[in-house]
Length: 539
Image (tube, rainbow, N blue to C red; front, side, top):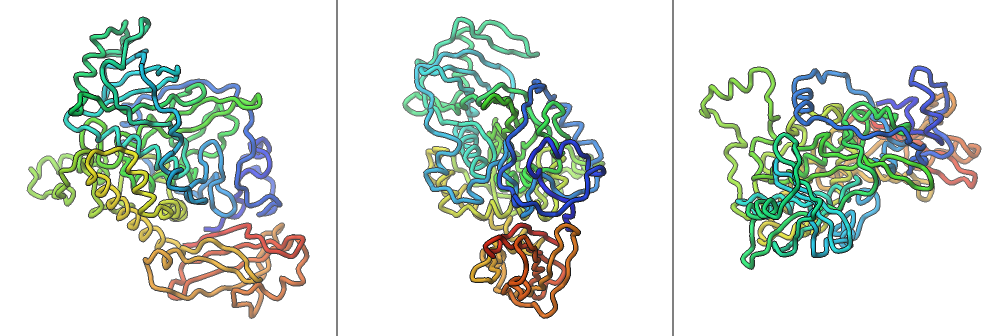
């Protein structure tokens, strides 16, 4: 796809925000600071206000609306097609490999809750009972239990999920497995409990006893919880997967067109995060150096892998949306199970904490969240490719290290989940590295353009040859002039006489796959060195 005129904010968000695409002045494709790796400092979001979103409304609205808006190229990307670091996303394991200790640590593991715990509030309704505590150091945590009949399933998923999504690049809470006894908790005198209909009343020790009674116990009488450290800043409610926040001057890329949210489909599919929705996100208002800005988080991962928070995940989830389109629901009802779906016939392992999670039927293109997500539906092959490169960055050892942080009592759970994630990872790589020409890691060494063929590198295809056509590139006029006879990966002869600031382009194809190409743009620096400043993918 041609990305003419496509560019992340050049120097200042304020400048770009003044122009709509139709009004934007003509200009060069590349600027001196390309490719941008980090978004410019934010403008102050002094007008930001908290907002709420009805879960029920979001479910029905997204399930029945027409999502037929034609897809457009992704925004919030740099000239290499990468997502710059920002308060949405930070490149971590996919760009610079994290150590095993860093993967285990995730967003932080240095502030585990310390007893005794003062219970400050609770909710008696919802998928799982939960309450809030202040620990011995005054830190605030949100605490949830595992379902009584399925110990470990939700708490492990929630902890493992924060580590994976953090390593992938998102902002997440610090989640901890908390092992405690009833004697570690006491109810604060000003504590409130929220019951049915949202009504609140003073909380009593007996209310906590009811929650504790529903919590699975170990043989020594301890209870297992997941404790989530409160995020920094003022909570503003969820972000939506479409549109922009009108009270945030930094939020100018429609969410459905952000690559980090489109590509989230691939990550959610890998980890089976079927409950990926607006109300499992949270914006917070932070202040640094006198500037107030919004940071965007993913939260609540208790319904990933084989867990659905309150029980093992229904095998249907991930394969079909909760509300089937058209008359599919009636047809399914009147078939009386005579023609079962493939996912109904899977034999899942009877391992504590695993639930319903498999790789045999996994197809990342066919995987769906519980109800339609606008950003997921807008994804294009280059969005999927970007996400797949991040997934494929995880080795089996990396995956196992993160899964182990779920503290499963059965070693078989770690082995099974790790193997399933490895197999799902490879299906993602094979699928999305075939949709585009999966060439990457471009650099110039010894006056020669070098690259990696990820399809071959990961064993998804045999070694193949590549052809190249060079052109000079007029950056101001956006015009290519082919250089006759330049068909090797060595820099063309015209490079030597080109002035500093000159641009060249190499259009690359794989032999036997003429429909796909990658164009790599180089800029000649003052010392004569070449910098890769742009990557354009056609499919």
